Image 1 (cartoon, rainbow, N blue to C red):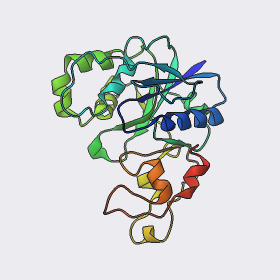
Image 2 (cartoon, one colour):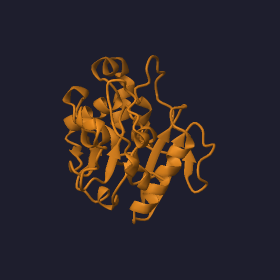
Image 3 (tube, rainbow, N blue to C red):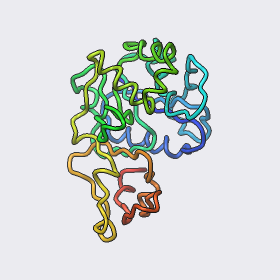
Image 4 (spheres, helix red, strand yellow):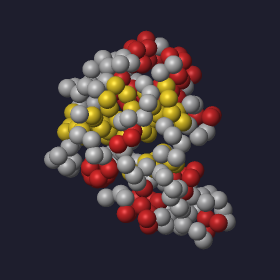
Length: 238
């Protein structure tokens, strides 16, 4: 038995994002698994989804949240979950098999960040063993002010800390792609050619804007960025 978990808080993403993620996992993961959403509001979620509260951070946050809540998955325990666990952001699209995400060799696996200025890793998709690296969270609690001043967000800290421990590995590049970086075209090609999905992509991440529902209709979320509708998204995202 393996675990697939996600996290939803606040108002940016509605329950439909989690429900679609659940459906995509069911279509693309053959391994026996639990699907769990850590959330502050379970209203509207599919009844088949297990839900638990998001664990409290061991410190009081002030200022921008920056995804720090995700570090609570690295506590000594996580509700009644145990073992190998795949974390997925709720705004990703699954386009291929997830089975190998559980067999790929490595301690903690994460996406290699495409922009080195933003750190070493992107935590939209990461695999870990519950309780195996509780020091990620305890170190964060003990050194939060220093960490917040040195790292842009949770994933920058997470990847750098684990890399220094020798515990970090990256997913094969072709498995996880960025919609903005690998599907959208540069101007003026973007005016005429719709975004295209690279071959062998298994997970497509949407960091920043556009979000999947915007990309389907050709919205980019930025005035300076143009794109044709990526209607093919709807064949995966449901």
